Image 1: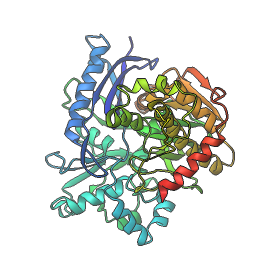
Image 2: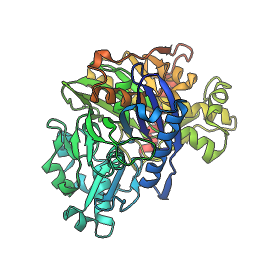
Image 3: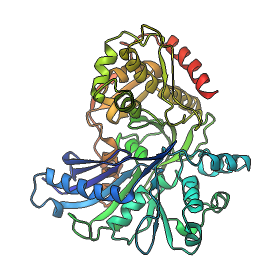
Image 4: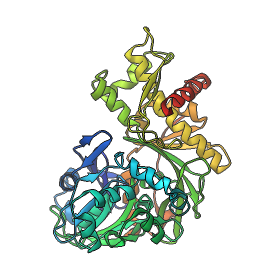
Length: 495
């Protein structure tokens, strides 16, 4: 075996570390550790940053042990990080201790702050400079809440005593023994605070949101050496941290969507559709987001993004909330046991609606229930609700791009569900392409680290992903009636 690249994928419900062969990028070792969820009130979701860090250390050691190599840790040549993007951490620069739990991207507590900023006329500035809309989803208002609600936080921030970061920044801080305070352009583009054109923190945005610039990390490229390991259990000192990208941008990169017009959808806790739009940040006319796709040597790429906050989490809700399935894997055979969902429609707005509606106050809705409705109908309606949410995003993306999407690459846990992929292909009227390896988020972080550390010379030297299966939706049949019922259900959800 050759040298190793460690790819750290820190997600909402778990941390996965892959030990990748530095030449072939094949997975030689893997370890996943669950992340505890803390639900502290209606619409509130928190993580403990120290629990995240301890899980990362366990996952690093587990992945290296899984390679079966006694000298695995001495073979590590680079580390790549990908992360849940908007989740916000604030910590004491001197002690390195968080002053509050991390506020997770799903958290909706800052809806009143967003509304107040809209009322003040701030949203056009945010859309023009940051490519985003005012929604509790993004980091900037979470940071504002922490500064306003944690005792002495604003005073200490003004004195330069506190450091802000998304999860990538927190992990780099810990991996480097506290030496580095850095993020990359993809994560910075999700804060409401960075200008997409200059790729720098923007004074006007900081002023509008009331954020002191002294808490902010340095913005780096997605592929460059930003720090080196120091004092990490299981790793030698001096390993370069050379790749950083938010999870969705890492998946876009890992899927090989290097050309303008390439589209991917990742099915995780939520679902996220990204389209590579090339070297210029083009504003959306259909309430999608413009974001940085990556910055690598010689190239900065941008993307349009549509976000559906609930995807795999809807299946978890059927399992944990309603108890109609015992494991997520049961949903496909259960949904296949009926030919259709009947009149049943499920809008999975369990934490509000994302793009293109942007309705944080919306809640989930099930319509069309009758005496003949069974748990199988609800299971199929859940898969359809996930796919319909994504179809709305793909439709909006095609309108922004001026041409319908012809092909969409997919990854993430729920992409293994063949029925969901068939339904998805029918609804988006495009080929859905599933690679043999669906851990493309972690793979993308590893590929970026290889570029950043100089282990590969350029994009052309990176391997492509073999295709496992293509779906065309032919097995699902006509979906016009389903889409009509969906539109009516969405209207009711938004009332």
